[in-house]
Image 1 (cartoon, rainbow, N blue to C red):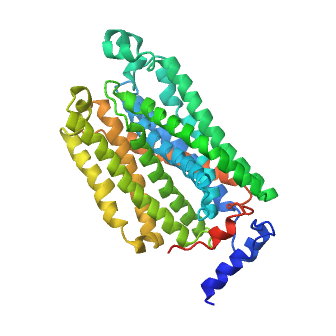
Image 2: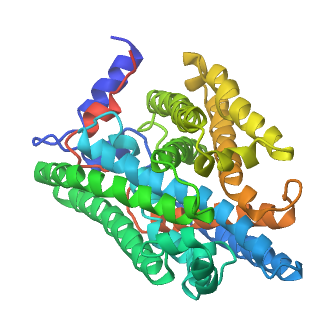
Length: 428
């Protein structure tokens, strides 16, 4: 028997008579599964940088002559990038329960903590939601009562696109995201104490209807916050397009979080290269999926050649935006497709970390491509406001995740009945 086989046997032996993994057994294996002081330090430092970044972006916005309009667009771009991470993680956790996945159990607690950032993301959306509710059309033309009455199309869409209903929908979306994330984390933590297999079955039963509701909530959230920037335009698969970015961003963050924890001496034996390999496969698969959905959306609109639909692409294929459109195709699909194609890349930590950062970068570029053309500026508006907004949102999500990790005792679900199978998982 090889040393690797012995390790897997020892991992599997850490099961209780009912099949639940024992916390003490994991410690005997030499693995550290508690958050530790590094997580607390990260929470504090990231929180401080988030305040500085978002505060600096707001101050820079005050210095502009457009009444915070530049700041609002820069903030929305960064916010939709951060929201993609949180919602992608929530989908990831729900999916693992839905399909009764075993390979991901060792990673699931990290995903649950990342999915628990929904309340913070809801608060961070207030600079976007409150002006719209108060009737200011800084971002959304339909928020202005006078513009709605002067524009027949806006008036026609007013039953849905109006400030009051927008606020109600926003509250419903984030109430659902928050409750679902807390449900899975609470049940998972309860399982750490009882080890009962019925908890796993309960989470699987909930995941079915939750997945349907999640799909609806994410779709309409993307329509409200992104597609309604230009309310004359519409796409029937816009929600799926945004979802592709969500899942890409979440898998990238999970890989980076696991590698960061390894660097801090956490989960070094529980989360192996096999788990990272699977995250890499997800990143590669959804790179292709994003390209497929993006092409499907473009091809159908181009083929139909309806002016009400084509204008949206026309403005993105003109001037400097044509360069961004080309770069988006090359950097978001062509380069990572060949870069992540090899099995060896997905099993090499530094290579996988590079592509995880790359993916997060091109997801932001995608959000920029979706949002900024509506700003209407000549050239490509990117400067300190956009950069500080991105840094602020990124650090806010990091801080929220780290603060969430501080509240749990263990970074893996130690008594999940499927944990031994996850610890022994090996790609074929």
